[in-house]
Length: 480
Length: 138
Image (tube, rainbow over all chains, first blue to last red; front, side):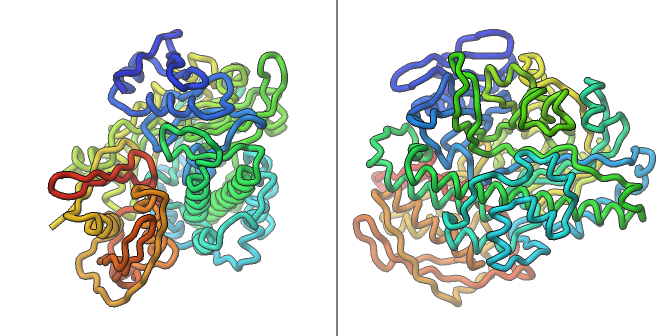
């Protein structure tokens, strides 16, 4: 929004001054280049809108991948006081616990450079993706409730993975407080058939190679080395999560008048955290989060099987292990120092990744000396980054960093500019093999539809929120 | 003839659509949404579903109505080609939706619509009729 004037704080931060009914100011992480992109976007106004919500603490924040969402901006972070604050389903998003999972292998690029085609074909054939796909696991009602309560733990107990996978998953792959009793019949119905599916749109599975290491110590702790083959998965809670969000949004919109909260956008509908409605949403949201962790665990398990079978390798030989799994659409109760005092807050991360520093108890023991891995996927052509959370994130961003490159072009615009081009051919020329169930998706997801992930990541690095550890280059990508 | 156009939204998809009357507008909304989801050519109007929706105001009613129609696809795997409003009064509508069950061998899906959002939602009375905007999360 051009009428909102941002004031430069330093090279990587812009202040959105508190005006009107805003309860706090906003801060947007952006360098000059990203700042210029903000001008044509509604996201600045959305940062201001979030600042209107009751109980918001310190600032309404936006990470450098910020772009126009609905209600909250995508790339938005906001923390709320447990007594005077709210929780907003729209501030989490429809795809509850949409997130990324990075797996390392014992393979080097030289070992598989002639097998990428075979691997990709096999992955594409055996991992359900695309609109309307159904999973290989059919859940009974009883099992589905277990999935909602136990998340990735359920998957591992059912034989889809290893106990050590759970240690490398945010929250151990199971969020506390999940209550399937707060999830509607419609959501359960939609969840029954979609476990183990990738989804469509920007969701993907990529085979990547570690191209560059920036921080040797952290890379070593994460088990990453130059030339290594890794796999990145981006997926979420599928129809179950969308339905949970939609159900609670409808409920909160219906009761908005009772709360006497004035909203600049109905999509920001919310409930006070200390009310039954607020608590019920968090209990249902945790179910969605757990479903997503079980989903990514299943996708990883299938990937392991497919690699082992295609390459005729034993599990130990392949050594496919989970580096980390992070969610980037979530609300979590976490502790932060506010005015010198440790305070429990409800942090909304809407397209933002947790980025806890070394020493934090929520960081897996094996990474605690360096910090939490932060996984940042870029566009199909550019590849991804691994970062590590820093102490500054605890001071400035409620332990959060960016979650991706962030779109700059709408889907319709991307479809228009890619008219008549063969996107898969263009990507093949850059050394990326792409298989997608829909040509439309490929066109919507063209690399130039996104900001340059390198710029986005550099802002996080330079501002000291999360430091660069490794750059990953895509070799093959499966899209819905 | 198409009764809607796509509007640019960075992350999602929005539509602007029209109707001679408010009733037309609501009917066109459902048909436009399904036109985004699936290729509607060759879909038969063989089966009938009746849905009811309620809302605090016209905008809320529109979102709730589209939610119900979207659930028929996302939850029940039905493709809707035609929508006819049977009843429209303040705060409530009853509509008859016609189409056929989704068949992955026959139907070409285009877009996965996750949800109907309230963001940027508007309904306006114009000189020639009604105009509305809705943004879907995709």
